[in-house]
Length: 251
Image (cartoon, rainbow, N blue to C red; front, top):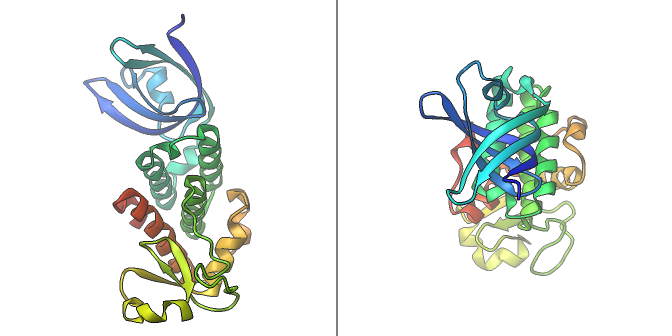
């Protein structure tokens, strides 16, 4: 039985390992998150190919007795050099990678996880400063859907009444959004960190962009208030699921 497997992969992280080697962490369509060693000095072909956010076909040798993996070859399909040309692109890409790694690649559905990530990074490669921020929120919102923790924002979760143009309050602890009438008994907590205010503009934007590809996101503008509410919401949902907040979300 061959010990070398071929993966459709995206490099999420590359860190030094020893004097001249590196360890890469990749998201694969076949097995999710995998770590492997890349051998060779600075002039090595594999070292130059193993930069973060490159994607393609990777050949990995696996020794099961030692649970050891090394990269044998890498056929790069997409380099994404543009992600390193603008600070906002680099930081957004890092935030996306950290989110994926912290959630263990989504825990399953690897092919879909890879598709969501690749589409976000492809759109990010040529994005301007302002669009980078929206692309991050868009990815995080879609990722909550992929993880199965995305809340329903069209109706009050308690009485079922359509929200329409009304304010909803999102309870971070129970993951539900309710109208003001249904949160009246908890009004003393509304301004606490437990509740997030979701105005119609924020909810309309999240609803509109939920099913669109990142490449089309430039068509969906939003005001600063709605953006801040949307980012606060998606990061709060993921923080609650992870039990911590990722520092890379706040660049």
